[in-house]
Image 1 (tube, one colour):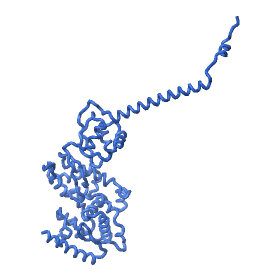
Image 2: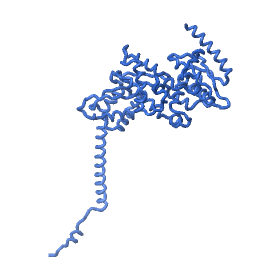
Image 3: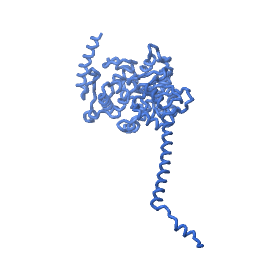
Image 4: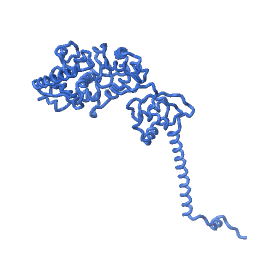
Length: 399
């Protein structure tokens, strides 16, 4: 009996063709890869579903009050919701809002939300704007002084009922404590010492804007909101791509001087392009050591809220550090709250009026919120006589 060795047995066996083996290996790789990809995809879908459609805690209906300030971006809203534990991922929520095409429909206000609300429910609340009933919208116009702001808030009504419990004087008193607010807003330390103990040290720094505020707000609450907005929209803002602080330094001015200057422009101008022109005239007067002779500063000194375009000699003779007919240079401080346009006009005045060889030095109210500008005093004097006469005649007709 012959013996067959192992090697001979192996030679006698027919194995798989190498091509078949290669195909099997490739197929196994594809199957495994597909399994991994499918597993990852399935996990990702589940995670995305959790982020987009599941609440943070389905069993927690505790009300969480969040405030969405006026003008807050989608990114800012996502930050607020995340900080309050209402969403899991800020980026995914922003994407959800954009895909829903509702980014421009989100409304400011005070909302009571909860962790058992999913992102869609939260988004619906922000779109419908059904804010809690204890908020109101107030609008502080450019050019109002603290006296005007305080009076407006004291008289503010909703449904024929006064909203705020404080008086105008209580608001004015709260705005006197500069040092208390300066601890939170260091730019207030730039207010000169001589004005810190005055009647309206925060004049010019309460930024004019539209605000959503609580009906039980205190004067401090509203003042802080306005200082927050000043910080965001002016102090850290850029004008013509130049940071405010950089431009101020280039001009050799202080923040308080710019705000004071801008407050005068704000109260003198009404039409957009005239802001830059009036700012140029005042720059030119300062450059040649000429009194600013701003009617608005005199009327502030006289304590008037309603302004008139022409003043008497007696009025322009009032002894006040705000009287720019009597004293040269800028007044001791701002006379109102300037907006961004007035500040920009001070930083970038109308260049055609700034020719040192022929500076524009005069303007006079010409009716319909517009002014006539003149290079010479003679032309200005004639224009002033003309328009003052027309103004007086119109006043008599109205009487």
